[in-house]
Image (tube, rainbow, N blue to C red; front, side, top):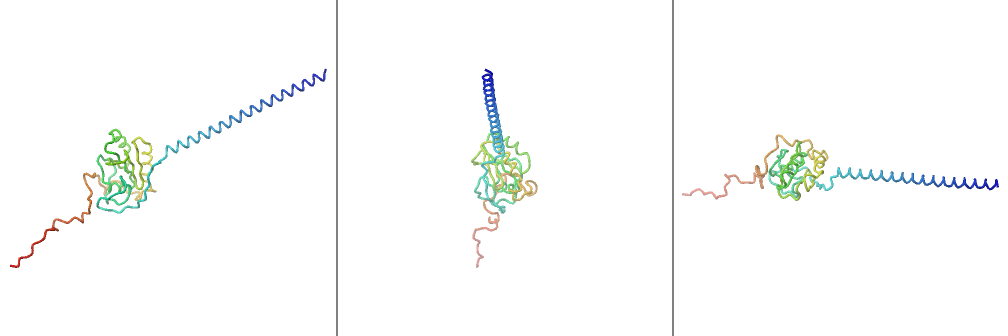
Length: 233
């Protein structure tokens, strides 16, 4: 009888130990599962923040070109890009600031050679959007003007770089300005002024650039009419 009670206690203890081990295994499994979930969650959050940060600083869509320092010319230039992003240009640079009329490409390109960012917009852009653009142009080395024939509503150009925008509220516009305005790595004449002596504040309508060199135009004295020969009488 005593042996049976002892055996029963042993079996009961064995069952209790087995139950305890099963409980410990379940607890460990739950802890490992919770830990793995936390790790996956942290990795996901970090990845999300990285993607968000990249999106916030991305400038995807910027077109790059390879123009070297441009030569000076007194006549109009047939640029490949509109607006242009480099190449030959007028000896006079456009004084940086806000303009309500179109500018000469040749003057604006010279300003970009000095490190300016030229923001252009379609002439039919709504007035409230134009006002938002004007609010951006509050520092030096920025040009703002309408530009007939733009493919996009707004285009930002600097020497050898250009980015198109579907509207003025695109956050990439301010990032473009920050990156390319007076960028020592992309500005051919870094440190050159965008105002003062040597610049012009006249628009294309006020000071049109000739299509041929002024030196190639015959002077009034150089008439093409045949001159009468002296009389022999």
